Image (cartoon, rainbow, N blue to C red; front, side, top):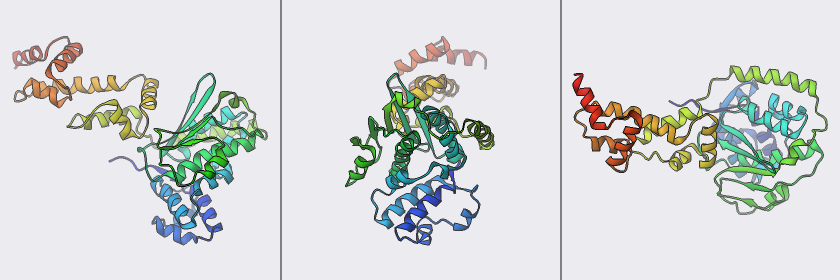
Length: 339
């Protein structure tokens, strides 16, 4: 059974405070998501990440603020994010702050992750839901990209403008607040939740950064990271999905990426960074399963090809010869000769 993704309960306060300012009683929000407020007494407690995401959506509905997430992100102080926030505030440059955000974000929550893709002229900061794309995460996602833009403007003293903003969720009725905060056309129903900006901004100094404090926070964050339960790696997740797909499903790259809730390009890049690929993992699994199936005399070779997801037996024959140096028939003869 997959481990439930969580987030520190400290994340709740900014939602409750914003909703309270709009006249919504905290108890009403707690009831809406079945959250026991007693758990909030210890700031180191964790709650299901899905519960936090739902809290944003209910708060937006109950306050009548259709840009609830954007507004929280625009006003929030990253120091509300505990060690992670203080590290961002005290990093020497915007680039170093983003690298720390990517590296240590799982201290705050393992329900989502950041990816930083840097080219010669552009940077893409992508926010991904680890358990797959959620259609009920609009306000959490908009808060995240809103705080990335708004706060970096404040701490660098530079009123910069992104090149692009895109979200996976559907376009809301009004995008006026998106335009006011981001100042660029915002795209919806896209493969990723991504903020794109000029790479020159990475060198912007953070005005009040304390390098000595940042070094201390680095050590503290590394210690906290080492104490977290080990999250199942992407390669393990892909192997699991391929195993399920080879049992009557569809093992194609685009299907696996959809189930993971990330784009094909992102999946390919992340697997490449781990020294493998979708095709390598699929071949590895098919090769292993083919040997097992061929030891079952009641299975015809054409049936084995079908079970492995090949469109025709000839494609299976070619692949098996590549893996083993022999044909499926020759492999079976070798088994028979040893029995």
